[in-house]
Length: 286
Image 1 (cartoon, rainbow, N blue to C red):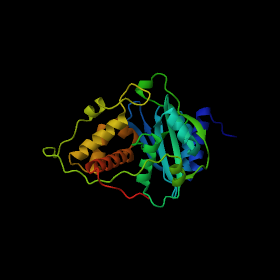
Image 2 (tube, rainbow, N blue to C red):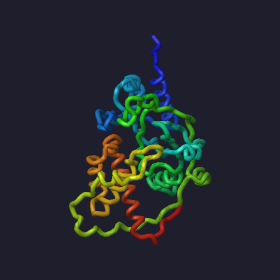
Image 3 (tube, rainbow, N blue to C red):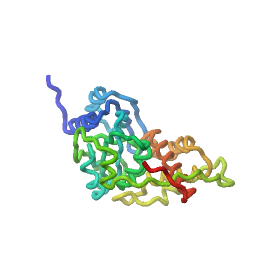
Image 4 (spheres, rainbow, N blue to C red):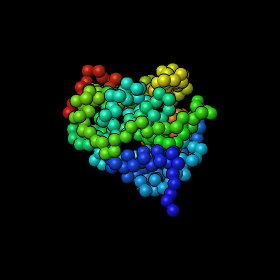
């Protein structure tokens, strides 16, 4: 008997197939509740296994989040929290665009080649040039599933595919010509530890309270709060690894997106601290 799928299943499977079209073969799957607390995690699930699981996951009362594994040698870059204007700038080069909540858009770019730059550096520069969240985690909610957050209840929005170009890949040079890649920034030495801060941690709540508003909303931008908190903790002498670990304890978003998000945020914060320390330094530009 032919298997039947509901609309949510179809959207979810379509999203997986679009990722597969640029070479993705494995996904990490995370389930979180309304408060962003992790309720399940399945690492490195094959495409076939993920497809088989998806119809059941779509019907669950949890957020369903997948992290596609990098399909070497292609570099996947997530551009999150895009405005309508920013989305239009990248729509033609994205293999997938999503609407995850009202006013919140996301685009995925598949970059082939890559000689002359590091993945992390180029991804950071593309996010900056495209006007995206600099701390995007590389994980995304699944199309066809509900976005379960307290602020949306009882009318939870459904994640939607707004455009798909299966197999669409671009080069770094193409993105540069389109003006989407920010210029290289100086690399500066880490500052000396601030006296009297050894062993102490900054207030996470203070960073949340003083964060700018999220795009299209009246609540704090938690990604910015996480980034600012990490920069402060690094300024106080903590290592990148320790900061990432502590962020998992402090931030609900870090717990929702996993250790990779926490480490990426801490690493990007460390780069920002380095750049700030010596404004006269220069960086090799490929």
